[in-house]
Amino acid sequence: MNKFYTLEGRGRSFRLICEPDECATLVELLEAEGFALDQLSAHPLLMRAAGGESALGSSLAARFGRLYIQDAASFIAPLALAPAPGDVVLDVCASPGGKSTFLAQLVGKHGTVIANEPNPQRLATLRQNVQRLSMANVASLDSPGEKLPLPDGSLNAVLLDPPCSGWGTADKHPRVKELWQGDKVEPLKILQRKLLREAVRVLAPGGRLVYSTCTTNVEENEAQVLYAANELGMRLEPLDAPSGFAVEEPALAEARGVVRVAAEESGSQGHFVARLVKPGETGGQAAEEFEYVRDAAVDAALEALERKGGEVIDLEDVPGAGRLPAGSLVAFKGQVRFLPHAALCLLQPRARWQGMALGRLTAGGFRVHSRCRTLMGSSPGPDALEVDEIGPLADLLAGRGVLLDTPAQTKPLPLYFRGLALGWLAVKGDGRRVLWTEK
Ligand SMILES: C[S@@+](CC[C@H](N)C(=O)[O-])C[C@H]1O[C@@H](n2cnc3c(N)ncnc32)[C@H](O)[C@@H]1O
Image (tube, rainbow, N blue to C red; front, side):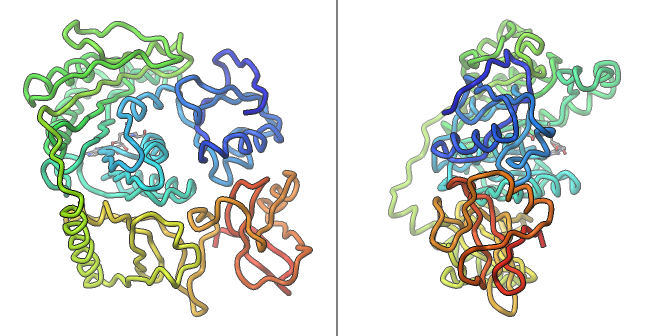
């Protein structure tokens, strides 16, 4: 990676949205706008930024969905869950999606994250973030976390980041500790226990559950983890102190191995993270048998979606669909969505869920959404627009067209910055002018 500055814990923490081999180019894009960057030691995708010609959230990288700003301590829970590439992970309380979309990066293209959020406004925010970051491996579900439409013992990795009193966010909300006390906290404690019970139900023997909050309240933290251990039969698995954070001792001695982030010393919010394991051996199904069961489950799920008005789209009709992982394309009201097969197999018919929208059906065939990088090649082909400087990117985002010096184009044009995919441009006029449009 490029040169780094020493921000000494200052600056905004954020996550790069890219593959490991693209980090250096994304850093170049940020540095071209005057940001000074530091890498966090916990993971190569995690950084801090200071300076810059604009706020980090208005940077070119942010506007092209190539970074996600979040508190540094919120990186710890996904890292504690540590899913392997290809895993299927459930995030029970997902919006706005900071942890779900980090998990989606950790499980990679061939893994799947089922991101659940019952609050309609917050679900909409989660879906906007999934779309903005172009995360086709996230399926968003709108179920109460106390009654998930998933079979018993169906997942090996679950994150539970429930509503909490938020005492750890006092840097942003100074009155939080005074407002969230006594009677107001009691319903949260009850909900957290119900969510824990349901998370344990859907977890397979041997599976991992990470429980995290942004409060320092022992009753919502260590006491809940001990409830899971003593009443729900889970085993508390000690975590190592996360790299780059200062931690405090657990507030209850029996809860050894939980992580309590010391906010001020860590330059982050206060956070609590614990890892629990469901006893028993992970059941191994013979690979062939699994493939058979999976194919049958996918067929049944697609038939059910067709009965509800979905139209299954042939992958051949969508340019670049060969780059998608195992999944199906289904159009609802003309909107073509990617449905990962893992989600199609696991989610019960009553589940209301969505995959990422890739584009829409028009009279001329499939029309890709500008932000759908999933259908772009990892390097620019002959018909792409590749820019080396940030000027044309700023022009495009400001609604100004860019003239091409190539033959006239008819189809949306893939846009790259020094080989880094950014999205699709609409072709205008005589086919020589391209525009960035979200329509
Ligand atoms: C702490 S926030 C989650 C933050 C998220 N994990 C992230 O990192 O971006 C808790 C979320 O739980 C949701 N929630 C509230 N009641 C719930 C329930 N009964 N089941 C599942 N989620 C619930 C809230 O709407 C809120 O979005």
